[in-house]
Image 1 (tube, rainbow, N blue to C red):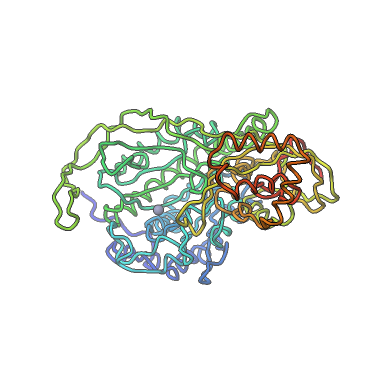
Image 2 (cartoon, rainbow, N blue to C red):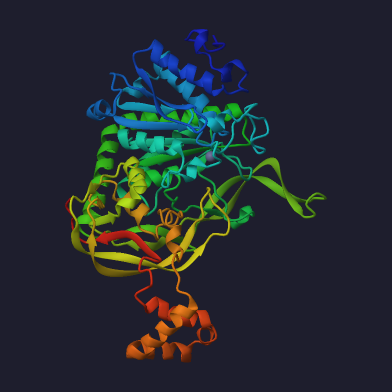
Length: 576
Ligand SMILES: [Zn+2]
C-alpha cells in the first residue's frame, strides 16, 4: 500500500512560520530568537548566548548545540569533536539559511532523526548575523529575488556590508563575530546567502577557496574528498549544484571567473585563518521553498561528512596552522598576499537557459530575456591565477603605542601581542609610501589608498609601551594581511593611515629661499643634485614651488615621518 503523507513527528509548537505560511514567509527576528531559544528551554543539548549588540541595540545571538553539554570553547575543544559554525543573514535579505537551520535543528533535537549529526560535531549557529538589516523589512528590498514575502536589507544600520568587513572590522557586528571566531576557532564554517545575476539552472552553488590563498592541506581535502562527496549527495536530493558563478562580463559567453577571494570576504577570511568556509549561494530566481530545502540539503550532507571525517579535518587544520608558522617563520618562505589572472582557462559546461536579446524602448538598447528552455553551453572558466605580491615575513612587527586601536582589532582576530617594558635601540625596516593615490569614491565608508613602497632600514629607539607582534603565531597570515601595506585588505589600503599622506608643516617661501641659498653654497653634493634636476626635468625647472621644496625636503626642517608607514618590521625576535 502506498503511504500518503509523512507523519508529523513533533508537536505543532515546532512548526516554523515557513511551514505555517505555505512556505511563503520567514519569521521576524523576535520570532526567530523565540524559536531558537526553545531548543535551550526544552532540550539539554542547546545553549543560547549573546555575541554582541548591533548599532540599533539588538542582541546578536548564537546557539551552541552539543550532545554532551560541551557549551564552552574549552569543553568543545577538549571533546575532540569538530566545531562547525553556521551563520545566516550576513546579507539579511538572503535569509533561507535561517529557515533551513530551524528545520535542521528540529531534525537533530526534537524528532532526533538527525541526532547522529552531533556525534562528532559541536554546532554553533548564528540565526541572523545582520540583525538590524533583518528588521528593515519590505517586499521591495531585492528586485531579483523570488520570496519570502517580506525580506530584510543587505547592509547594516550603518549601511556597511558585513561581507567586506572581516579584516577592517569597522562594524560592532563584525567585532562581535571575530571575538566569537577566535574564542571558538571553528574547524569549518558555513555562510548562507542567495545570489543574484543571470538566470541559470543551478539551484545552489558553493564557494570554496582552492587556490594559493589557502593552505594546501585544506585545498587538497576540499578538492579530493569533500567536494566530490557533497556534489553527488546534493544532486541526489534533486538540487543542481556547481561552483559559485561569477561572470567575466555582462555577456555569458565571455565566461566565468574563479579567483581567490580576498580576506574581506567570509571564505577568504577563513582561508587566512587556516580554516575552510563553505559559501552557500542559492539562486535568487528559484522559489523561496526550493532555496530553503537546497540550503538544508547542502548543510545536512556537509555535517554528515564532517561527522564521518572529524578527526581528519581537525588534524588537517592543525597541520595547516603548524605549517604556516614553520614554512613562513622558521624557514622564511614568502607569503603570497595578492594574486592576478594569468588569462589561462578551462572549459566549463554551463547549464543555463536559452536567452535572446530584445530591443527596449526603455533603455534604447538591447536587453537580455531568458526562456525556460534549459541549454548547456561551453564557456571558458578563468581560474588560473599567479602570485602578484608576496611578503618576506619578519620575525616581529612593532606598532607604536598611539595605534592601540589597531591592536584592539588584532586581538579580536585572535592575534597575540606583547608590550615593550623599557625602550630599546633596534635596527628596523620601514616603508616609505610613494605614488600615493586615493579612490575617488568612498567604499564601505572608507577612502582606500593606493601606493607603492620603498623599504629602508633605520636604527631607532623604540619606546617603552610599543606593541610587539611576534609572527610565530597560527594567525601569521592574518597578521601579514593586516600589517603589510601592499596586501589588498591591509589597514593601510583601507585608509587607516591616510593622515600620514598629508604634509602638516610648511616653510614660507621668503623664509626658505635664503636657507636654500646657504645650503647650495655649503653642500656641493646637493648643488650637483639640484643642477642635474634642473638640466633633466622641464617640469621641475619651470616650477618655483617644486624647486624650493627640493631644499625644504633636504633641510632639517622637513618632517621625517611624512609618508612613512609608522609600523616597523624587525628581523629578530623582540622580547618585552
Ligand atoms: Zn550575499
